[in-house]
Image (cartoon, rainbow, N blue to C red):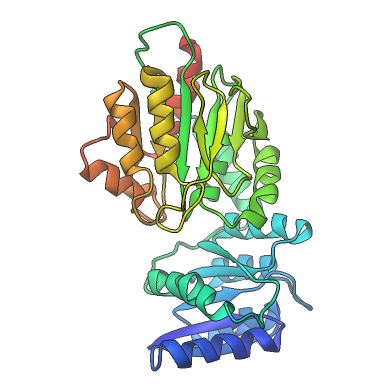
Length: 353
């Protein structure tokens, strides 16, 4: 039986998750309950749960502070389950940075007839995935900053992409679970780039604006939404704030298509990579980061077929080695890289265009 610590100030949420568990997963879950972050921190030490469901906005101690305490004292897989508001979105991103493994958007109407199906397909699915998941102890932010300053500067080992023309490349990144933390780590170390970076990140749409603002604070680059009929510009990082798949028209401009989700995901990396390869050919560089499933693998075939490059994040750096594993096993990868090697590669790329 999976022991779950549920930290939420809403009695309705506690009753609802108990009901869904008993109705659809009898005998599989045992819930321990806390109504604020302070109680959650205490219960995590006393009850030693297998995983934690964490709300963000709570009295006494919010979910961000509780996540930081738990990841320093007794690390557990923490799934953030929160409403998507502008106020909360930044705290959610900071919670992921502090060590939470994933975020699920809390429905506005918890009495809806569809809410049980939604929870079964999202929250309970993630609970099964992260049961037994190994997490690492996190230092507090001051310690991290001190260690970063004391760290010896990484040796420059950037690999150079051999382009067949003098036109700048187009970098596309696909990421899912663990992606926000990984993307921040990469983008925060990039200097001004001579090429655009386009990101497909699997994240509830309600958190996309907060995700963009969070990245914007972490990077020297501009960070904008991909907009219909505009060309990707060098030095800009693009994210998608549309419930549509991202593609390109024949002029290389952003285009959105209303096709069904893939693996329940829209926008999906498969559509994006396919269009990136078709339109930009040898200029296309696809980078597959941490994430569940195999989104991006089919699209990577097109990038390779058109002369582009595929890079996969190394297993030892992945929070979830699903998406990179899929492209590696499909023999589509030109190079497997750790996160710092990806940073060096991207910084080195600007020297040649």
